[in-house]
Image 1 (cartoon, one colour):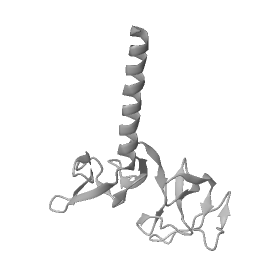
Image 2 (spheres, helix red, strand yellow; image 1 turned 90 degrees about the horizontal axis):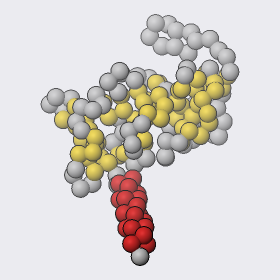
Image 3 (tube, rainbow, N blue to C red; image 1 turned 180 degrees about the vertical axis):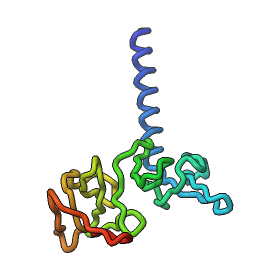
Length: 156
């Protein structure tokens, strides 16, 4: 009887923790900005600060559901998940994060370019390309090797 009660308590605690975690993952986080001192953070819908102000120097994503694009303390443009793990670097285009095209945006890992889903942040096409253009009408120009040309301000 004691053994059954103990197992029942463990199962109950585990299910409650899982439910709480699932609830936290569904909770939308909203970017908060203090423009007087230029710091950012995220709070949940109840107003509780989840990501403290200044943890990331800049928070680009305004509504953090599944992933957010931020700039970390090393100055990297990265995507983070709800547990604040780095998912990948976000491709920089025109001094900011790559804009989604056909629902995908470019990402980089170890110097290679791939694509992530703009809705959920999951990698849609693994990083494998040396050069990659945005998608247009379901296709994108990519290359396994390429050379970059720069005029000092712009590169192609």
